[in-house]
Length: 109
Figure 1: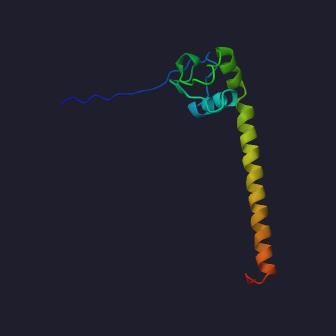
Figure 2: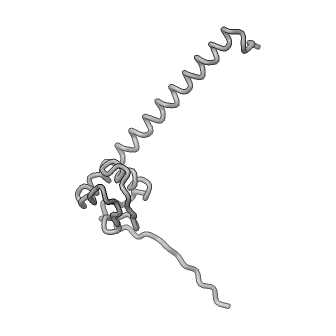
Figure 3: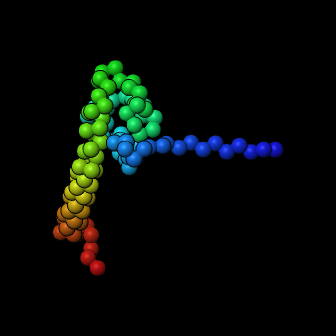
């Protein structure tokens, strides 16, 4: 019996503005310009963007490419925000622990 293996891949040319961006990064860029939009993206190029949203217009190719150019800034902002959030959570745990220690709920070893 002959086995057939189906391989599915996305081919992106080096000249493509999307070269090097993952689908999740492209999704973040699209959410920046069209929050909560409904769409399907086949591949990683504008021509694969099928717009399903009835409330917002499909971004132009220039808007799409501009959003992609901002991906490094978007990711950097997310990393900074996550780092700040983790720092605040750590401080809150420390304050809560100190409060419990002061009330005698937690005994120091």
